[in-house]
Picture 1: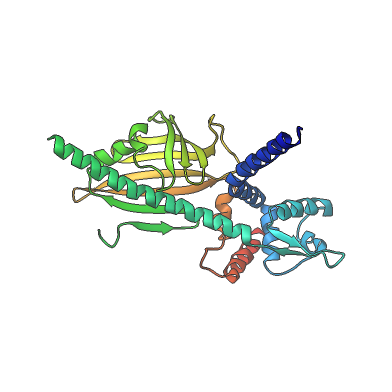
Picture 2: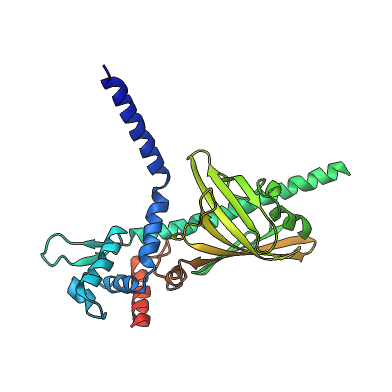
Length: 137
Length: 168
């Protein structure tokens, strides 16, 4: 008896939550990328990985940090999808994944486009104001 | 329209746009100075200012919402005016915020400067947008860690090597 309304309610809530999620994914992923990049150790790790795959031990070497501390940084980078960790070998070497960095670049490109289009609109608006002033005279 | 209009320059930390408007400086300056005016033009073609409160004086806030009706996305920002010189300069900091005006600290903040000058009876507007935080983002951008869309990954590698060398 109540199965159908319950199902309808369930799917409605699921649809709404998916819609809400679909509105903000880019911002969330970008926030994560920015947060991951906002640390000098993590940037240095990325710099290291740009030269090729490395193990956790190899990555830890140049820093005066414990292995758990390095692991913590790697987890942040992994969650932000800036690095990938191989499942093949037991020591799980890390490698750089640059896609989120490209997203940051696209985001900057949107900024530029935003202001350019804004100025196109300002141009039209000012023209409109001048015509209006002209007509009033 | 001349060849130099519009003009875009980008350094890694700064976005510079220059545009000449066929209108007096006073009019261009005024277009920035009230919600009533800014709602008529600020924002891209798809993203319009739908909410706006503004206290146009040094130390005053500009809290606004941009909405893309097709995608149903909206984005709140909060700006604080740092310098206002009529009719030649408006400088403000801008941050992502929510409807209540709470600032989103994880997203980059920007410093904007709108400079207006007279050029043969027209107005030249120079907009400088400087990405300033989270504190290290500027450094990230400056170091070129972020690949330009058209550049290959080996350029990124060079930058990262330089970064590693600088940190070492």
